[in-house]
Image 1 (tube, rainbow, N blue to C red):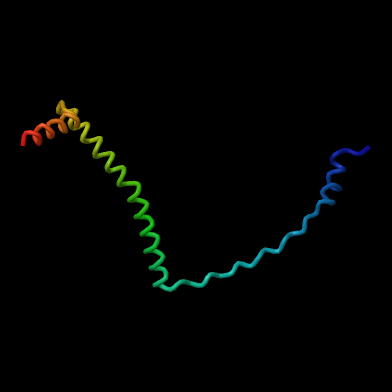
Image 2 (tube, rainbow, N blue to C red; image 1 turned 135 degrees about the horizontal axis):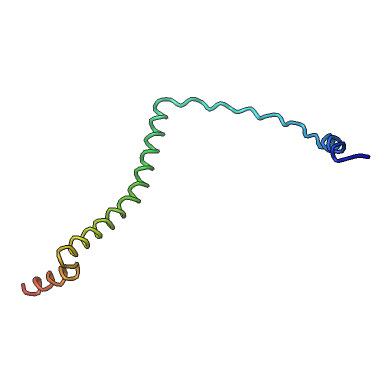
Length: 92
């Protein structure tokens, strides 16, 4: 009588996988201080550019929102201000 316990080592013995040799990592040449500085500068410029594309629209939307909130607190609206300016310029 054989059981699965007796058959398992035979199955594993047929599935032997030979280990692959690890490829040798090539050492990167050490960068000079000028090359390191250029890399830092390049990263900083990219970071500032991305930050600008995110923050400038956020600031513009925030200013518009604050303007609406401020005018609503005073009982006015941007449309009322524009119509008032138009009335003044038409009178001139």
